Image 1 (cartoon, rainbow, N blue to C red):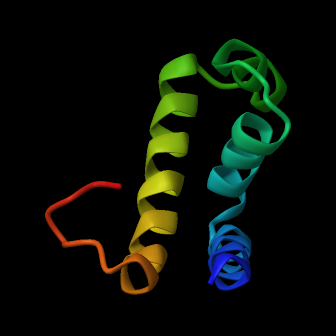
Image 2 (image 1 turned 180 degrees about the horizontal axis):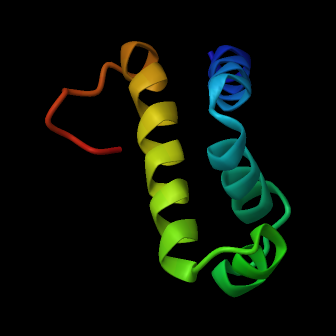
Amino acid sequence: MTQEIAKTVQLAIDALPEDLKTAIVLREIEGLSYEEIATMMDCPIGTVRSRIFRARESIAERLRPLLDTPQDKRW
């Protein structure tokens, strides 16, 4: 099951629009701060936060069937 979840997460990340993918990878995989990401992506911190939120929501939607998570629960 763990491998299936990891594969689903990777597929979900790969399917994201480039701006969301870049933001989530820099935050969750590279461990950069919001400020560092904003500088790298040349955008406001609020935009970075929004992109990361939307990326997480998209990934969570793909994981729901595997984790049997109710629709009204965020993560």
